[in-house]
Amino acid sequence: MLSTHLIDEVANLLEHVLLIDDGRLFIDQDADELRDAATDVSGTRSAADAFVVGRTVLHRTALG
View (cartoon, one colour):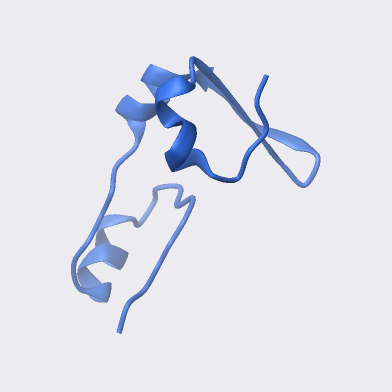
């Protein structure tokens, strides 16, 4: 078991992911399946907003 906020640094060590958000189990999934299900989106704000309509967004960062 490993508890961290530094996911990028330990990503290659993970086999199974449990993500707890505010005391609730948010994700309970095999790490490879979770990686395959994720998508990074970049581009203009309007294009990114249009792409994610109806999808769950876990993290958003805006530059500029």
